[in-house]
Amino acid sequence: MINQELINFANHLADLSSNIAQKYFRKKINEQKKHDNSPVTIADQEIETILRKEIVKKYPDHGIIAEEFDDVNLNSDFKWVIDPIDGTSSFIIGKPVFATLICLTYKNRPILGVINQPITNERWLGVDNKDTVFNGKKTFVRKSHHLSNSVLCTTSPSFFKGRDMEIFNKINSKTLYQKHGGVFYGGDAYLYGLMALGSVDVILEASLSNFDYCALVPIITGAGGIITDWQGRDVDVNSDGRILACGDKKVHSEILDIINNFNL
Image 1 (tube, rainbow, N blue to C red):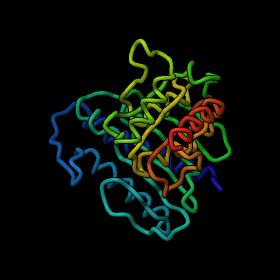
Image 2 (image 1 turned 90 degrees about the vertical axis):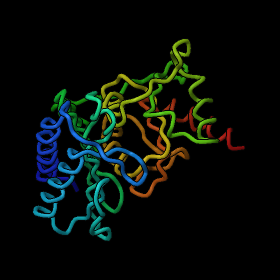
Image 3 (image 1 turned 60 degrees about the vertical axis):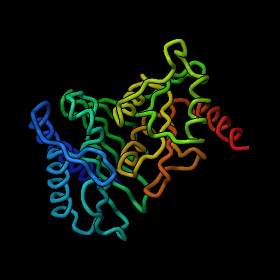
């Protein structure tokens, strides 16, 4: 399904995005507010524009789903799902934990994913049924064995509303580092790269869009982890944005039990 040409092309897109992000990072640029009040910058728009042009030129029949502009060719079996800067707020304040996310899906299932951090020069590449590589070398999750031994991360507490927040708090109360608040906030997609490096055990998210999570799926699974929705179902383009990623499948099952019991 995935050949070297597609891998090379994904890396080419990541290289192009790096050039633009590096040009604007820690420079005075004006941010704008989108309809949902989230920020966007000229860097987001330039990256997405050039990646779209490259995809249309190389694979004109492929679809594109991305954050800043309209989707195209949604009936195509192959679709590229792109977040030009995941973590725009971090980018704006000069914090190098944002990333460009590039994913190729086949029949809505993610089969290739890239997390590209252009300031620290870190890149994760995940390909369906292959080991994940970090800067060209294979990388793997760690096994924490129990939730009580697990480091929990999430992007932001503001993503959880109502019952979702209650579930999150219940899970967090059982994790490591409770004396220090338990959960580590911030990092967006960069957190998933850390999981693939064996530094983070659990990531629980809500309210994500498909361009936020699709690229992460091949990276986590290829590193030996597991990533699903909160019901344990495989993640695809149409998932509801509630994401559970774990380095250890036993911990993943432990968390699903908590969620299922909470819903009784």
